[in-house]
Image (cartoon, rainbow over all chains, first blue to last red; front, side):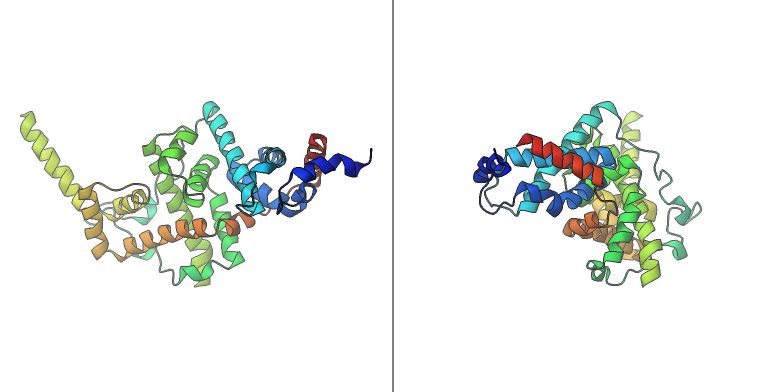
Length: 207
Length: 100
């Protein structure tokens, strides 16, 4: 039998608007891998997640009814694979991290006396003029990514779910098996560290 | 007297909620991104922000960082430097082939 014949039933099953699975790797392989790697921080797990996504997409081709673009359809599948990964990992490892940034920038606040807990003025947040103007700048996103990549793995998991993917607090807690209080502490420290890092590495240099 | 103690404790914690310092205000502004703050804390934070430009900046900045990431997740993902290795590509391709 010729190879074309083997692939025919599959192609016939694919709804219009969906490209040949042979091309998925070229079109979306790297994007999906980056997406998974940023969130899982593990090359082997990210590769597996991409593979499972393509396999699930191949089987579930019918569920793609052209409702969304092919890429976001695949990302939706990948997202679920990533959540499965977190769910599984949370049964074995502790996602709570109360060590990271435990001093919460205390070097930038008055240590005692009348102004205790106030910003030391010259170390307080600087003015970021027109931050929105950076959103199309690739170098800004590289700086953002580099700062986020400095967060420890578990803090990054929380940060990505909540701040990037917009998952509700309660769902993040259920997914990672952490308490809401610990979630808030981790998010606060992640935001604080990220803000400081970007001020040093981007806004302080480019304004 | 436990009753009196309860009242003085309540007044104290109420006063504390109404006058957060900057360090506490950073925490509150972060918490406010994830839940509705209880009323006394909300008022306290609001009063603090009226008089503190550093904390106003801080709040604006953490909200900007969230908004930027949520608005442009593709930019952030795209900034990841690694790509699929040729070996992984081949492995996945073969696995897909075997499914057909």
